[in-house]
Image (cartoon, rainbow, N blue to C red; front, top):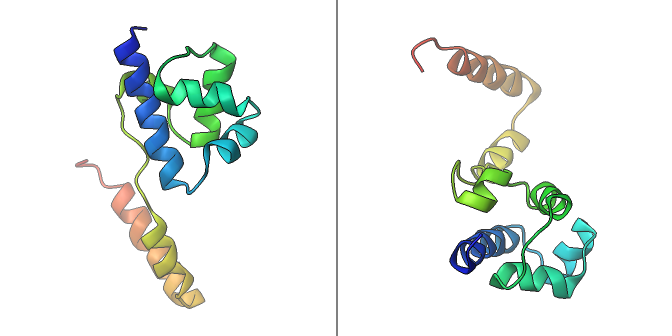
Length: 109
């Protein structure tokens, strides 16, 4: 990877870490890597091994392709959906599940 590619990957990781509301130290601890090393990854001055990439991908909940190449995009923020569902009755949850299944099973997607 070039320095520019490493910096772009680090930027994507930093954005996701911020979305998750974690400090660098918290993220590094969850990923089981050193905080200083993780900081170097975020600024693009260090490369990641495959093992570290896997740890960072799992912790950030980002696909490896997105971290490395910027392809595929981060997963959508579904916290609003969670909030809506949390306020539903059991009957409303059942109906919402049925609607979602019908939507996902549509053949014209």
